[in-house]
Length: 370
Image 1 (cartoon, one colour):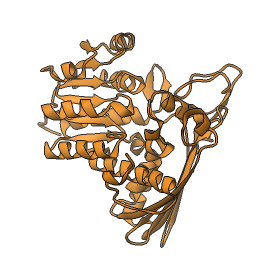
Image 2 (cartoon, helix red, strand yellow):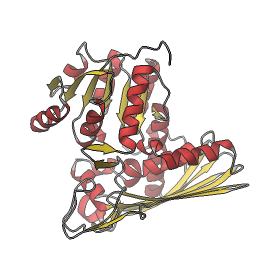
Image 3 (cartoon, one colour):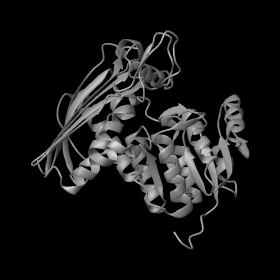
């Protein structure tokens, strides 16, 4: 690090929701961040977040923000279906980005965005925040170092409080673009695919059920499936985001097993090690609900608020990315290509469940129903 001068950062945050605020608060504490601008459609929300993080510029137009001469890096934290326009605007200016997952909710749009990012040779990473938790870093290390021999089977089981699903379905006009795999199961899939780095998926097979969220939102409750690889490896996965509101995990409860030829690794990420039981409802998760009086603490993926600031993986991911921007230090963040692959696999699994037959991958966007 001797002789290396940190680059001064002018940060644009597009979208000032929960994640925009979380990342903005972290950015205000980074020594290289000299300027922060916000683009947010909701004027009251924009004003509130701007005050909390001391923003230097506020607008309702991402194009106006990204045209500012101070901006040299961008966080895109809009709703999932609104990523494309700000990404393309950042590409036009050649700005490096941290993009909330996914790149897009439409596979064709995701492919287009990826192609433009790669054509411009931009440094663009995607917010798969769980990569910054120590247990998953350690799991990947054991898989990649050969401690398990050759990995031949992976399993993952994710249970989620339905408040997350309800929040997502209420924010979209097209429930067909929303599924437990595309929106939330992609986190477990990314971690497992990260541990399987170097293996090539060739086929998927899945089934879905919709007895809870189907009648209410034309949505999907749960999906179970398999991903087969060219070398014979199997990844079996399932996710349900229809757990009752009283399910103690505020958001995510995950179990993973990785079996190799000479070893096995199991990870209990259900968060049952710290249990909070109260008489007064707590503000945990996406949409706190007065019926929730028991909580698996730590199950909110971004981390936990403690002593006035966010602590945990999203804070570490944001700080790591800012170090990447200021000092050029490599990070373990997901690449845009990995994010597109994850979307492709979740879309292929959803398609298999709909068609009730195996689907070969990689999936061409043209193969999806219009």
